[in-house]
Image 1 (spheres, rainbow, N blue to C red):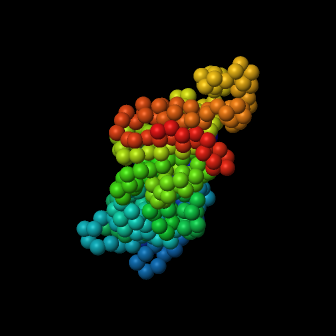
Image 2 (spheres, one colour):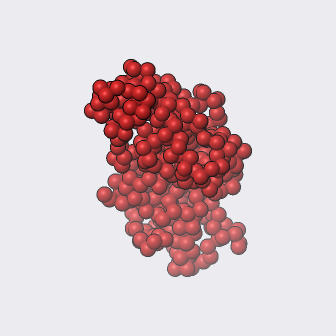
Image 3 (cartoon, helix red, strand yellow):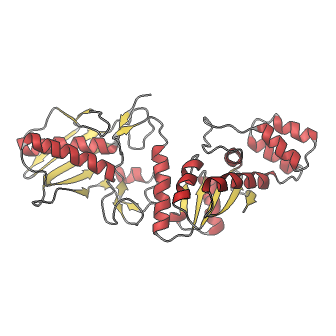
Length: 352
């Protein structure tokens, strides 16, 4: 799979190109940036604008083979001189969000340009300043045309980032189909909930279970964590950043995997063990024919329907198993319940 470059790496390249135009009066044909792990990507420019006292350059983001929401977006950096001894300061242009809630690694009111990308941008601007002459007291404004609409497809609203996207990327490199971005969002969601004094959060595997648990408890949006398949990413972070109360909500198949000890619930990385489901049914009093039907089932939901047909509380048994696994990962300190929902959002299992 082909690697790509983060929004932060593109912003650094655009900023360096803009600085060169500001200092020399002309834009380079392409620009190379240096990343923390030694990579040196070369970018061509999609946008050039030079005015009195400012310069702006743009780069089209190539995320490689990763299904990144910002793949193909244009990242524009405008550079202008800043006050003496101010260093590099950042502003949010159109399409880049602003932090409005505590709990993120940026102060409220700051542009949503994360510390990692800021370091990459600053390091490359300082190096370019040494090469081109002049100081590095600069104001850098990052814009992403269309970023506000793209941000609606992300978790930014829930994290209190308003007005657009975040500029992300600690290493500058996008690894195809990396889990890192999602897990990062889970961690930041927990941070925001804790910083805002929320004692009860709910982590859901999908939109149906999230809507169901939100309706059940009338939780604020900042209390909802889009866990997806990353139960391990959630639970390991909560071990060191605990909350008083956690509700895990999910579909029967996903939570069956958790009950069977899997921390990654993605279909390509863990599978439902149908023999285990048959054994759990037997523990509930199922006859041999029901157990055999469970063993030969094609889907977990088929097993649940088989159990419901004979009035066996398999959903509750799975909820209890998932809760036991999750409690072991949390190692105490958090009150935990598990809620299992069907595809229509009906609760079919509960424990805790």
